[in-house]
Length: 113
Ligand SMILES: [Zn+2]
Ligand SMILES: [Zn+2]
Image (cartoon, rainbow, N blue to C red; front, side, top):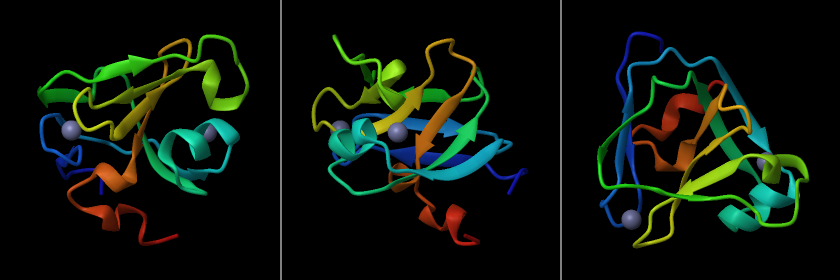
């Protein structure tokens, strides 16, 4: 897992991202912010270090909740400005990036869970 190039994209294909890894963490978030943003009851994601995620096409739009600081609303969601796909999340201090597994070309990265 750590040697592979992790690639992914939004639903319309305008935004593409890639990371050489390594995957620092993997998990599933079920907080209210992630549930609403993704429209799914759980949000599988993998962690990569900031600076290790490269946007190779398009420009994601950052969404920071204007009033709520609860759970993942304390950070920012990054979405495709055209199709609205949530792509990844960054924490408030920009010390971690959580990439939504559903955007990956190889969604089997969490297969071990
Ligand atoms: Zn898109
Ligand atoms: Zn969350």
